[in-house]
Picture 1 (tube, rainbow, N blue to C red):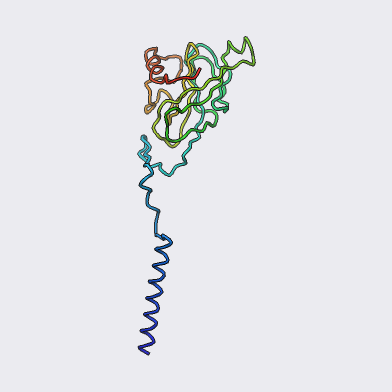
Picture 2 (cartoon, rainbow, N blue to C red; picture 1 turned 90 degrees about the horizontal axis):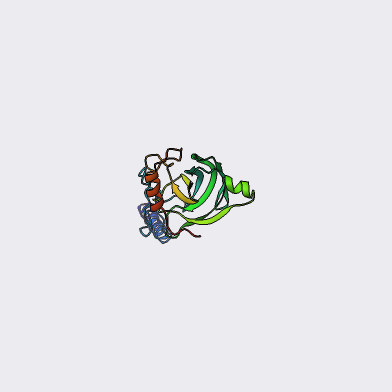
Length: 198
């Protein structure tokens, strides 16, 4: 009887050892997979949350900020309709969506098309179409892409988790509500000039 129990114990140990070897070859582990050391860790600056596992692309709501005396009849970013806006007014992410990479890269641009009120009066089918560089942004989880229109047909596009004028917005600029500080606007236009395509 003792020999039988000894044999059974040895067989069980051998089977456990074999199972361990098989699991090792299968790269089996308990718990979450450790992070890939070659993949950069992405921390959202505002919240401090690790968003490394978030999708590589983000889908941003379209906002419009109009700093001019000209109304905008229709605005499109990458063929997504963003609506229109009256002079010296703004909207906060009314429509969805424009897709951008979560990690900004040099040369990132979007195509915009828009029509001002005076353009519509001259030719109802007219639009201005151009490629606009997207200024550098830190990775964020969710937010907006703003079409920003200024006098003299100057256009900027900013990807951001915040609206202009709110704490955390990357530039010292109000929300286009008619009280725009010309000096702040000038600094913003200089900081975001990029190499705008003609």
